[in-house]
Amino acid sequence: MRLILYVSTAVSCALCVTSALKWESLRQKYFFPAALSVFLMCAGNFIEISSDFFDSSLLGLRAAFIGFSLTGPFCYVFWKDYKDGSARPAAYAALFLLPAAACVSAALYPVSTLVFKEGARLTHDSSFGWGYHIQAEYGWAGSLAAIYNFALLIITALDVSVSPQVGARSAREHFLAFVLPAFLLVSISAFASADYLSSSSSACLLSSSFSAMLALFYWNTKFWRNRDWRQEGRGFVLENSRDGYIMMDEDGCFLDANKKALEYFPALKNLEVGARLYGLPGLPLSILSLDKNLVTAVESGGVTRRLRASRCDFEHMGRRAGTSVFIFDDTENYDLMEKMRLLSQMDALTGLYNRRAFFELVQRDFGLHYRNNQDAAILMLDLDHFKRVNDTYGHNMGDIVLINAAKEIKNSTRRTDVCARYGGEELIIWLPATDLPGAVLVAENLRNILASIEFHSTYDTFHVTMSTGVASITYGEPKMSLQQLIANADSALYAAKTGGRNQVRVYRGAQEEGFERPDAPQNAKQK
Image (cartoon, rainbow, N blue to C red; front, side, top):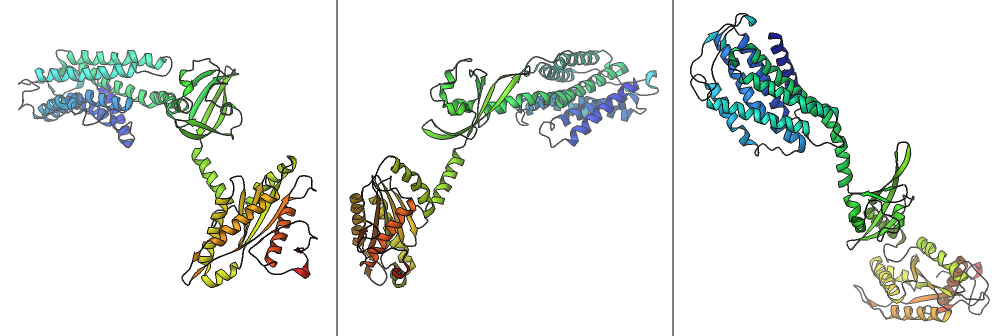
């Protein structure tokens, strides 16, 4: 018997130390007081029965009863917190009122008679050698505390053994469903024996049952329950993920979808398992495609989302059974990339396209106009005497002039026109589907608008004029490149600058009177 008590005390002590070392773990913090309570009970029984002195035997009896009274509430609170995180100290404070009263009474024995009736006698048990035992019958309060403690332990044991799991019940669950209640029945039988406190067998049964029950409890939560949580966690994370998830079989029929997928595609809510996904209203075919880099615009709740999808096949018994589609909301990245793309294309000062973006955008349309036999034109614009403006009124005023000129150009052109800052004070405009007279009309309009703007500086008020060169491609004429068309417009601009500025000149051929080839060294002049 002494060996059984010794082993029970050692097991409870080991569990107490293990839980104390893992105090910081969220799922272990309430296990420590439960293990401490069982350890107090086992150690108290061992000391009470094996001690040779009355005072130490009485001290062991008090420790055993205090530990016994607190085991049920602490085990119950630990399991509730471990199972669903619902345990809160304030919410469960009432569970400890009766055990606390019983513990106080046990600590004050023999003055108080709340737990024990008066009277105690010393007995001798040859199975433990010479030792002192205290025999006392429980009063009503003590009996009530014992019943309350066992009731909480029974509720906890049943909840541990029949707690809902993923899939079929395992052998471990069947084992716990029988073993935990069996240990409780043994404990109750030992406690209910008439000579509980003088019977070494009762004390041993109670201590060994509690320590074994606590070890099973720890084994369940430590080595088995975590595995169950792995499965439950996967399902929870998948269902509550911020990314969408759609599962379909190998024929493209609907199997399952999580909350986020239903939010993206409300039509899935009324879709039955086995229904065809392809062709479902509101579900783009590109989402179910193999191209994971494809970004699809989807209207959901009045908001346009940019979704990106990837696929992963799953197997059953060695063969492909279906496909899982993971849908990511890439709107933030898409908007950021779009913003960066626009910034890389725009001139920071004027808000017009820069030179690189101009060539990228116009080169595509240029060939299209030739294929469709359409007219188009290029305007090259240059602000007259712009260096004089910078030197006289300062570079800040020069920037204001450029900004206003760009603003008027954007307001006076179509959305299909491409306006850009070509370099310095030179601006360029691509006018698709525009014949030569139309291009000249646009150029004259811009020239008149800019000339009418009054700029105010610290010194005085001034006006700025603009020279423009126009070149066009016309159906039936020999084909040319975009670079050649720009060179022609630049030649016309050169003619406008040398012809007096503040005018529009049209390129009609390199040999026409009034034009000079811009690449002729003998005629090269500074604009």
